[in-house]
Amino acid sequence: MSLITRLSTLARADAHGVVDALEDKALMLRQHVREAGAELDRKRCRIEALEAEDQELRAEADRLRERMASLEEDVELALASGEDELARYAIRQLLPLRHGAAQIERRIEVLTGERGELEKRLAEQQAEFELLERRVKGYLARAGEEPGGVAAYTTLMVTDEDVEIELLRRRRPEKGDA
Image 1 (cartoon, rainbow, N blue to C red):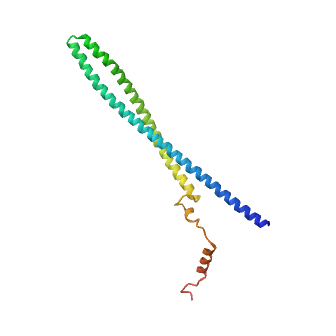
Image 2: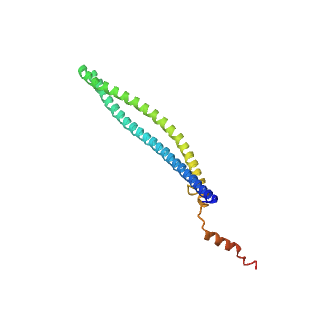
Image 3: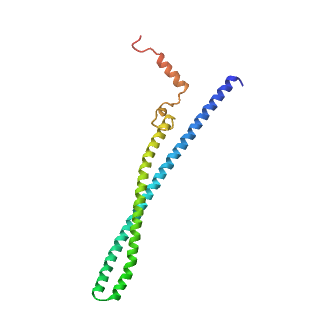
């Protein structure tokens, strides 16, 4: 094998290695973008779950308040009628409801704080994700991997026949030159 043939083979192999390296980078970048998008989706789902739980708890708190108001009226009526035993009965029902309502209110506060923090982080990460996505698309376009970049329009495969036809066109005298 001659030295020129060996060098030519080496150059082609090196070029293929560069293309393989670019493809691996492109695959990794796309995978990272997909994972970042999936993480944002998980955060959105978590926010939706927190909102649903918040709505359920608020509805339950409203039901408890209505029931407690009814029991308060029963206690007042029993006391006004001198029926201490009935008042005690209504109070025994009222006290657990108060405790439950207080627990629900505390949970609503926790949910509100958690949701607010998550929404804040999501907004920040969404902005970072959009920047990352633009940067990756730009990189891929420059590397010829993404449609819409200059490299996508300049990587046309040119055959020997295409070159010959272009040469003929350029050698042909213009109609006005004769």
